[in-house]
Amino acid sequence: MRAGSLLVLALPVSLGQLFKSSRNVYELDAQRVEAEVAESRSPWVMMYYADWCPHCHHYAPIFERIAGQISPLHQGAVSFGAVNCPDFTAFCTKIQIQGYPTVRTYHFTGDVGASLAGKTPDRHIVHSEAQFTAWITRNAPVVESNASSEQTKVQEPSVSNSSQELRGQNTRGALKAKEAEELQKPWAHEVLPDAMAAMRLADAEVALLYSLRQGTFLKGSNGELKGDSLVELLRWLDYLARTFPGGRKQLRQLAEATHQAVSMSSAGNALSAEAFGKLLDNRGLDRIPAEAGHKPEAYWRKCRSYTCSLWTLFHVLSVSEAKSAAPETAGQDLLARMRGFVAFFFGCDYCRDHFLEAFDSCKLGRCKLSAEDVSGAALWIWQMHNDVTLRVAAENFRPIPTLWPPEEDCPECWDKKSPSGFNSAAVLAHLSAEYGSAEWHEDTPWLSGAWTAHGAVPLALVSALMLAFGAFKLMSRSSHEPAARGKDTKGS
Ligand SMILES: Cc1cc2nc3c(=O)[nH]c(=O)nc-3n(C[C@H](O)[C@H](O)[C@H](O)COP(=O)(O)OP(=O)(O)OC[C@H]3O[C@@H](n4cnc5c(N)ncnc54)[C@H](O)[C@@H]3O)c2cc1C
Image (cartoon, rainbow, N blue to C red; front, side, top):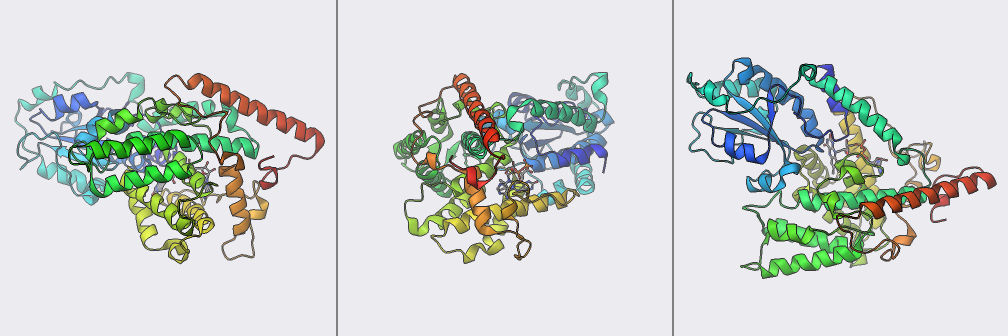
């Protein structure tokens, strides 16, 4: 494996378009797929991805190498393209991209017509470099000599000489710039737990808005959600409206409006992407404006990727003071909604498969938890998160990562005598301090109110106030006592 590929594997951050500087894979928009790929007479292989999806970053160098061996630029006969679906949600919904990465082929031997949807080859073949290269070579139609003139219809990617370097080198440069940028951010530095919880809540709100925009219709068909996925969406919205500590008023309104939109649909049992999109327009949450549903990057505080903010959302829900409608099933409800979300609305195919397999096989003692045990459910999510972190590191040949919470943040959480190595009660207290606040019980009057796309200014103000408050507390504390960390300072 090349150094560049390894670096890509190690990246937890979103880097925007994966093939922007590629010489072999055209980074396309929806319009060009419709006009050039679907209408072409020569074969195409398309990768539909999401820039936040870890396995898309993993697969991108493989796709690049396959394309490098076969693409027209290399005297082959097949063109390769890619679409970043979060930038073209309506289009990807229309052609029913249900998970990332999805690889589709167009105009191969035996294909009939020029369907925009293309064909989906077996996933195991697609993910093996050697097998997929052989498959493409075997199944590509014999190209007539005039096919090359058709290929000239597709604009070559504008690659400058300097950007013809290895993709990994570009990535490395981008990473350095990103790291430098991150260091500029005030929240990259140590913060008090109160401010930390507020940042976690902001990240959870971003995840929520982004997932509602990008993930809701993954399992839809013809731009509509019906059946199990619609039932799950309504349950999820009702659950959030009751339990999520940020923007409860807006979430209540959204849940009600969505139920209403379903009942007003022609058969009373469907939700159209268009109707739901309108319900989301201009609907932000307490701290985060609606715009984060399209472009989340500017709004993350602690996270740098969608998956990080998604974990944050689950942890925030797990320690929320507002419990489920039925306390006797609060733990079960939390885990059921999390499972439902991952099954229907989380686009990373591999993440989803692994998670559902773990969940359904009762991994980490899930099935032994009693229905009301919400603390047990919160600890199960914490353990699952650590478990995924360990697995991802092993899959990518990285050193064993430090599990959360790091010992320096919570020494009492670590218990070398316990079989798990952790003290569960201390971990639960730490989780609650980091992902929750007693002040979030009710709608937060100082921040609530519908955000609009212009909410960025108040957002910056709130951030500044929050950080100034944190800094003031830090200064006043350090002048009176040694800096304290962890649960003791929660809520103070
Ligand atoms: C359900 C799910 C399944 C996933 N499956 C895969 C997969 O199969 N393959 C893959 O490559 N990626 C997967 N991911 C993504 C992966 O878990 C990370 O989100 C991604 O690699 C980014 O990592 P990160 O370093 O930003 O930190 P993340 O692991 O995203 O953590 C986010 C934040 O949570 C805190 N944190 C870390 N661990 C814990 C914990 N145990 N409890 C509480 N807080 C914690 C940290 O402070 C960190 O800032 C999955 C994500 C989700 C939500």
